[in-house]
Image 1 (tube, rainbow, N blue to C red):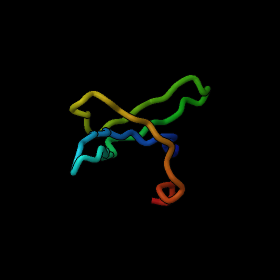
Image 2 (image 1 turned 120 degrees about the horizontal axis):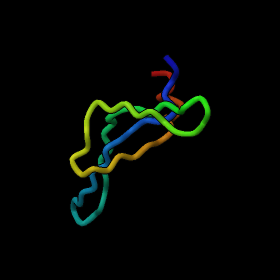
Image 3 (image 1 turned 60 degrees about the vertical axis):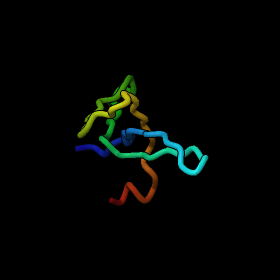
Image 4 (image 1 turned 90 degrees about the horizontal axis):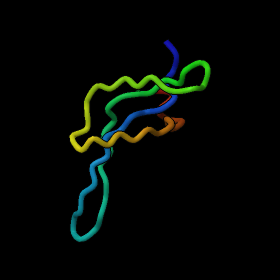
Length: 64
């Protein structure tokens, strides 16, 4: 199987002590199509708020 092109996250924003912050939970991965025309997304969970953020894996995540 090929390596994922992107990681999928559920991002939950919250406020603590008057500061806004966000909590990122990895919920899946995305694989680029060979022709570059799209992605296949494989999720292990669904976000409650309906928002999914795709990010390229960091260098240290590639080794994991």
